Image 1 (cartoon, rainbow, N blue to C red):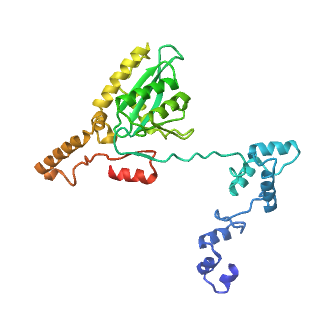
Image 2 (image 1 turned 90 degrees about the vertical axis):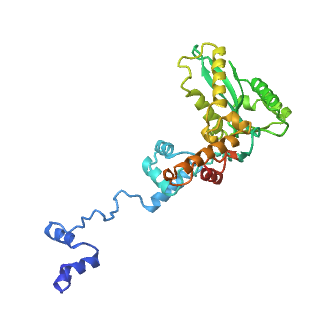
Image 3 (image 1 turned 90 degrees about the horizontal axis):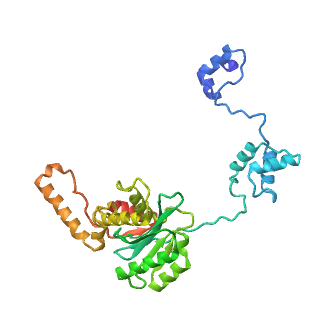
Length: 336
């Protein structure tokens, strides 16, 4: 640099060619050492493994002995044999660089495909059900609530409470529902998780006899049965839910009966345009929503200056999907 400046070159232009700033050059000239002290300079660590050593790590990790083992298992086993190829963290880093932290194993990975979406366009087409625990005053003793919901109307079409879980009890509940709702064969799909009462032989035989088609969530997937899960959350977070545990099964049944009456006939459900589930189940929601729309139109006509756009959308929900695809979710959001 000094030679270039002595030959007549301007310092700033010479620095641009070399790739340093004039200020940095001035600091180096004043310093005792002319070593490159820029923080952006890439320096090669002295303890860095060579490409040959990295290749050895990959080869050992993919060997028959260690292909199913993580670095935390590989390094100690090699040490027991008097072999050291790298530290555990270095082995992890090298495997990560080669995208082999999870792909080396030969362990079978079970990929359960998402069940096909089911769409209900009216009541008594798709039911969903589950069982929830209700604690008693005796520690370790629970009451069990069996509850079935119509996903289109959100109406609780049937429930029972018992002191045990049983496929036979669930079968009795479905027989009762099908009789009260006049369900014909091949009319209803019944969705549930993979619990033993849901997949028990008695239950499946009863569904076959009734002509009800069973549908199940994926194993170990918690959100394939969202309607029942949401219902049970509403159930247990009701302000009137007893703070004290239930003394007897009869007490639990009385509280459940009050809840079901409130939920079906008084609760304005957000998923169905804030109509009571029983009204929608009886196809009365269209008239209710039409009247609401007219109320809003009259209010806008009376005071148009208070409205910057359209009135609230009171259009009835015509389709309800169980486990919808991403495209169906987007369409549902736009419609809402």
